[in-house]
Image: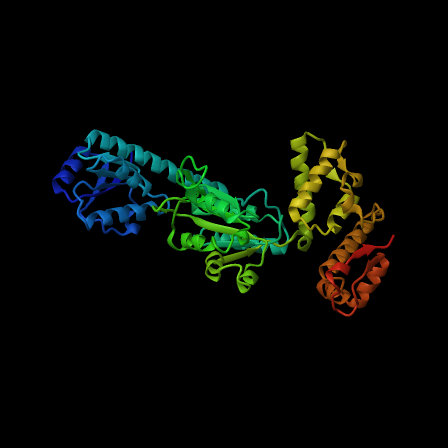
Length: 474
């Protein structure tokens, strides 16, 4: 048996209220109100709302009704709102629909039509709630298959992202180009209550303010030369969902106040219009710039910076999480082998050595491109050194062959661990020994034993980044 449909009926006409309840009959649980002053939290258990405006046309009551409609439409998964309005004027109907009405019926309404609209609205609302439930259930056991990381720095960042995802706060994601900031933004969206609605991404990188403004806010017909039709911007497209602004630091100082207003008031005007459009969005931004430094130099508004930077997540560069290189590389090998219908299943030890020692200035994106090229060039089942780009092999020395024994494997593991730790410590043997938990003299013996050369000093200080290179002696 179907549960009762819970309806909130707001009307100033008691006679129409009685007739409406009598007509609906069984299967409905109707709560009647004679005032539009309703707490939004009280409607969370409501399946549909009916606003009767044809008896509420006074100077003071109509704005209250419109304000209620606008507030309800901004809540998460709002119930459908059916409005009964005495006027058939098209402009008034469009205004009501733009403020969140599901349907607008002319007064007096056909009670049969009203019942059909209520049923249809309830079915639509139930479908949205079920989709949100299934999406949340599906996302629960996993984050995103594209985010592959086991390093401590990435694990801490992803754990923080999981914790703040359900909270409707602005997030600023920082990190170098190619580290996967957009993947983190999409993970936050998928783990949030807004996941049933879209995430709309837009990159502000190297674009003039006029183009960024048009893309974000949209325009009315005739707003400028060539504007032959009204176009909704990214803000409206992201309504009830998430707006992801990539490279937000590239937005010009003149456009920043308009973005600040959207964050503060959740409304804006399209280009060429003076009518305010309300949106309910969550803003997630990303940048490879130091916004705090830009604030100090007057290139970024301080108030906008604090609005965007409620929670900050930093995605570390690939060179600082070398433990993830082999995982990512194998993931890309599998993906591109399937895409190109190749038989490639592995990488040679020399290839893995070259990948682990590369500086990766382009981060994960560069690694992805290198593996894509290698898989495309490979003919057999293995990727070899000659499949890698020449620039990646310029300072690479082929490692000596590993003894095919248990002891040989242990030796190679120790040698690779020492090289990685020295790199992480800037070539400082003192710091490397401390991180490894061994005496510095013992580390010296291991370095000599495994034929490792370090250009770092030996007194605990660091040399410049350009001279920190850990290599193996031929």
